[in-house]
Image (cartoon, rainbow, N blue to C red; front, side, top):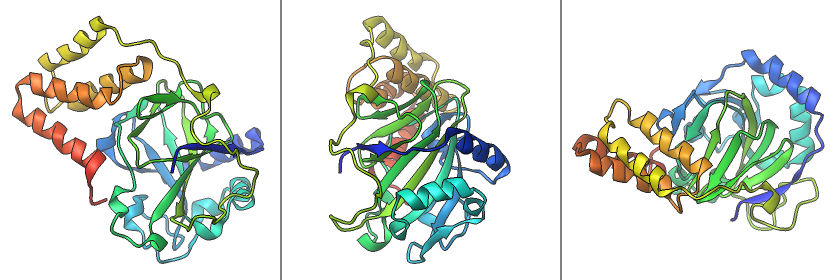
Amino acid sequence: MRTHMLGHLDMDELKISEELASGAQFHYAEQYPEFQSGRPWKTCMLWSCGGQVGDGVIAHYDTSKPAQPTEFGERLPYLRHIVEDSFDVDHLLFARLVLMSDNVLVPHRDFIEFSERSTEDRCGHRLHVPLATSPDCLFMEDNTIYRMPFGDVWSLDVTRMHSAAVLSDMRRFHLIMDFADVPDGTTLLKFDVNPRPGVPEDRKVDRPRLSARERDAIRGLAGVVDLENLTEVFGIVIRKQYRKDGGENYAWDAIREIARDSGDPAVRARVEELYRHCALARAE
């Protein structure tokens, strides 16, 4: 599975913005603080197995139950129409409205918590549809930075190291849908699909190379890092990777170097623990 810009939905941006405004009072769960540096990353469950809002952590739902709209999904009729007209909801497990602002996500891998589940009841395909976005909303896969414009439909290979960033106070909303790990040949989409996988060139962001002076300045954060400010220090490193090209796996390599040079074994242990949780294995 490769990341793939699948196509573009002809959505009414005014109707979408009106529904996002009407949903401002919905319950948004704040999850995965260990993956973030900035304002809370929030989700509102619109479709779930059993139709329950729950706590929004997808590993906590019984995927043997059929998915259906939650009370919040029922209250967004235009967005529900878009979903049902554009996707095969028979294989939909979850749909979430995700709010992000002035935040960067720690580079991580997803679906590793489902490796022991059968293919019928585990998430196998994650699709993103941007509903409110701006040029300050960026994505990273390995060392590729790119943007998703309003109405795009993307299938993300979340088993690869990836991240997201909103480098302003813009309130970015995405519809994120998780589909079952269906057999090859099963059609999940009801629109014409772009046949070329990968990130299109016109969606990619060119960055200048990270200078030697900047590398030295980042390494110098070892002199101030501690357990109390580790999240903020890592956020500085991640934000720099979005703006400057430091090479493959720069953020993790840099924070490990900072932790090592800090001379604080607790900081170094916490960074290694976080890496295992984000990239290798986790329970939920």
